[in-house]
Length: 373
Image (cartoon, rainbow, N blue to C red; front, side, top):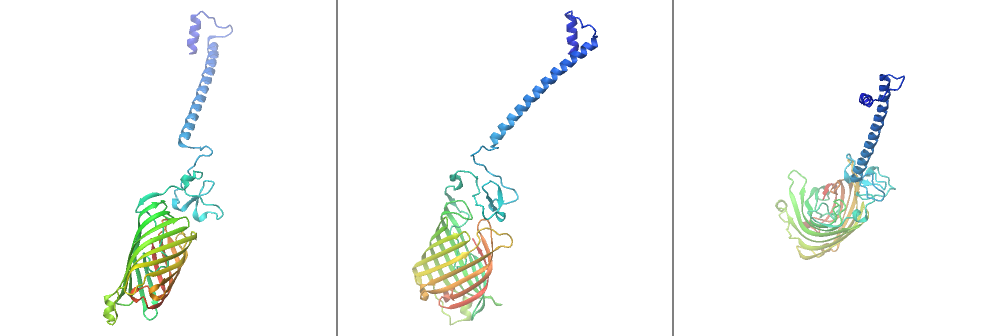
């Protein structure tokens, strides 16, 4: 470029300045052109940087970060902690439930400053929903669950009382939360309650069978249940062989039940229930009542579990409105959907829950394992 300028100068008849040779003149023009090129390059780099910054800002705006004041911000979940064990503090940081401060309020697992309509989503129709709206009474003797009791009964020795049952939701119109769902739900339940001797022969003594269809409701701290159930009792053939003088009775009932429960705290539940049988046989009478209290932490506590206490009382018309009292205490383990495993001691006093012997008084003490849906 410098040589071209020098040749053009010579071609126009330009003369070199005195005292300067050709090399000096070329060096001066080389320095001038280098300065001009450097300035142009710096200008190009600045323009490129400005355009790059504009692109970055555009991408950030499209991605939604940084968020403008007053908009909803979704805080990402830490990969090491399950979502069901997390809650959101007002400053939008995630904390594990076991490490939260007791004085800090809990906010639902959604956008921190989202509208109220997002914090409380509407109810939806769900087929085979997860969770139950009205759970079984923990110390209830005729609730559908999986359980085994090893109890000592005065006069009969050690017996095994089993519960082989289940209860599932068929249809719900309500929320999607499996642990604390709300709405209306239609369930089906079925259970068998055999009693066996804990000796070498393991003979069955009797068994009760129950099935039902509860319609349940839950909103906030209140729960309700309207249900139909059928219950019948049966004396085992082995027992009749051992005691030929025993008389088999056909105790059965078809009843309508209304139950109400209240939770003053999420770990504490108070309930009362009334049942009226429109069909009875074998000594059964229409009215029955039960009531009680369950203390069972509603959140998972980890490997070592958490304590629980449950008390249930039952009153039945066929025993002149007498009944029985059941008390349980022990440890429990709960998952994030509300399913519950318990192990502990049980005390029972009153009229037998085995309806083939419904007039017989029993006093039991023993150990039990329970699985509730």
